[in-house]
Length: 161
Image (tube, rainbow, N blue to C red; front, side):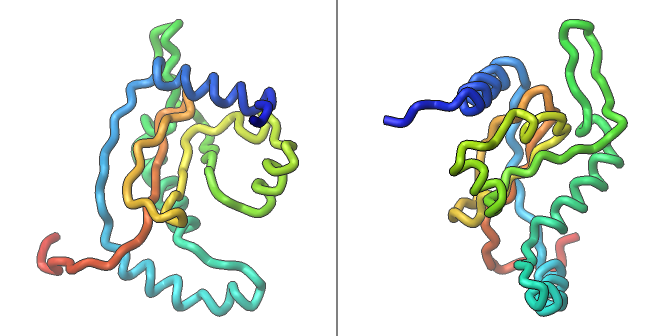
């Protein structure tokens, strides 16, 4: 048995509240990323010389930011008490990832609620654990969460546009 920290309890309570307060709709889709793979390969050695493992995530984050600015409703918050939708003037992506810094803080139970606040949209990449699809919970009052699964090769009809 492990005792729950106050941070873990608050996160669990907020996630449960989210399932009851936000309209959760899941859309599963695939994207052809061969050009992204080529781009990463082109720059991988430059980053590895600096001891940085270049992943797909920074490219996905850049695409998400562009989508958020093209579709501001993705960066909004429902204010049910005042019957309004609040469009954020800033973009703060909460990124759920397995980084050594955050993992170390989590292992030492040093994550605080400030590590989780003020995000307007969350990105999670679960492909490293083998998943293709996920049905994640929005971190309310954020408007959405983008889940990135594992890459896999499959035949693509190059004539479909």
